Image (cartoon, rainbow, N blue to C red; front, side):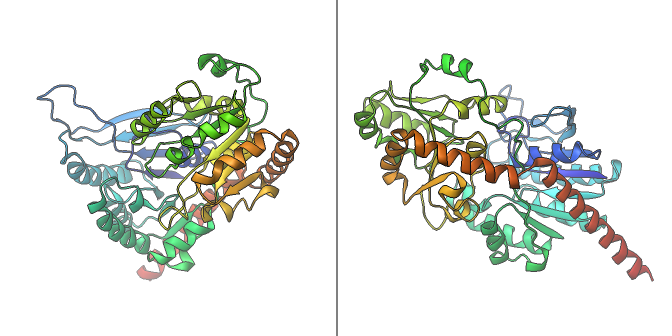
Length: 412
C-alpha cells in the first residue's frame, strides 16, 4: 500500500510520538509511507523573507525505528505571525491533493484538525480513498489560545463524523470521539505502539548521569514530557522541600520543555531548590530510555480535572516498560489501561498530594520491585509495536476493499 500520514506539527522537531511509531512501523512491513507536516517551529531567516511557498521533500526519514523510511513532504506557507496557518490551509490542500495523485495513495491516516483536517477529508472523498483519524488527544484542549478552542471543537466534530474510521488509543478516547460525533460503528481501538526493544530495563544511563552531575546511588525522581500548563509539576515541585527533608539526597529530574518552564524555574528559585531540581530541556528521543532508567521512581503529575481526565500520556507505558515504579495522578485515561499496582502504577488523587506516595516508594525498595515486575509483565503482553502495526495494516486493507466494493456497486 501507499499510505499518507497527515499532521499539523513539525515531523522533525516534535518529540517522537505515536505518528512516528505507526508510520515507521507500517513502513517496516513493506509499505510505502508518505507524510505531510507543518513546520510549527518556523522562524523567519530575514525580515523580508516572508514566504517559502514551495514544497520541500525529504526522503528516508527515520526517527523511531532503525531501517524505517518515510518520505516527508513539507508544504510552504507565509512566514507571517497570524497568517502562517491561514496560508498553510491553502498550501496543504494543494499538496495533499498532489500527493494523492502523484503517489497513487491508497489510504490516509490523519492526526490533525484546524490546519488540514477538512481538506484531507474532502480530498479523500474526491479521490474515493479511505481516511482514518488517529485519536490520541482531545485536540481542542491543546489549543493555546482559549478563544480558538470552540472553533477547534466544532472542526473536530465535523472531521470525526466524516472520516471512514476513528482509531483511538484508549477506551476513554473512544468514548470521547463518540460524544464528539463519531459513529460508534466506525470507532476501533488501536493501542499505543511501544518499542520494547528500546524501552527496557537495565539500559546504561551512565552518560546522562554524568552529564547532569548525578552520583551513582542518588534517589532520582524523573518526569519526561512537554511542560504544558496542566503538567502539575508546579504543585509537585512545591512538595520537594518535604521530599528532601525525608530523603536529603533526592533529586527531581524534569526531562522536557514547554510553555510552563519559566514558571517552574521561578518556583525552583523561590524555594531554593536549584541543587535538587534539574530541568534538562528537550533531549534526543533515543536517550529517553537512559533518562528513564536513571530513575528510582517515575512520575506523571498532570492536573486532574474534566478537561484532562481522559488524557493518556504515553510516557507512562515507557516508564513501566523500563521496569520503573511509577506514581501518577488518577486520570481515567490512564487507570482504564493500567488499573493500579498490579500494572506497576501507584495513583494519587492530585499532584499536590503526590509527595507522600513518592517518599514511601523511595523508602521501600521491596515495594518498588513488586511494582516493577508486575508492570513489565503487563507491557510485554499488550504493546508489541509490530502487532499494532499489523492491526493498522489490516484496518486499512479492509477499508480499501470496502471503498472499492462500494464504487463497483454504484457503477452497477
